[in-house]
Image (tube, rainbow, N blue to C red; front, side):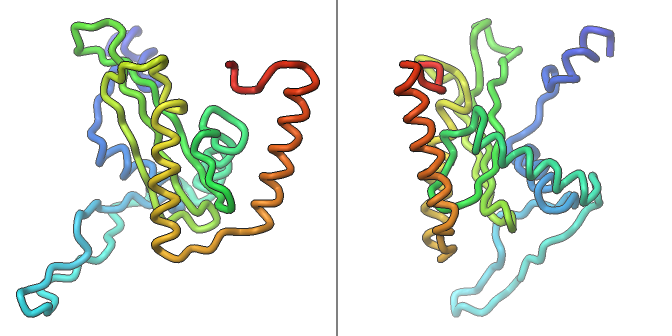
Length: 196
């Protein structure tokens, strides 16, 4: 690895990982720091409905401290509440996330990108993760926070409702208050906070 590769690796360029590897890494970031063995099914049953195999979560090793995990969770929540991930907000739920707009170095098109977003909820007890990756989107932007975050929010909201996770009404009041403040601000100076 030369100096250019070392520099580009510092912000994530030059390294390729699979989507499962990325989801596994983010799970370790938000679950307290434990790298888990990924698995696809929770159990296998036979034709009569009897459980043949029950898959249990397996910790491979600790990769970050619990305190670092808490700090990262707070930072991911701020990305959604006050940053480039605001399109992943879901009324009544604490959501954390991170956008990705990665350059495809092996593409003939020098402008080729992957627009991605990873969202986790509920942040008080991170349980569900959704990752959306759009490979070479042909749109007005290639930003993951603009294109992929809204899809994450839609999927997560359906999961949380299906799983019966109740909305926090106090959060909804805070969100409404923030929205009103943003609208007043936009009305006063004739500009918006979304850059449009």
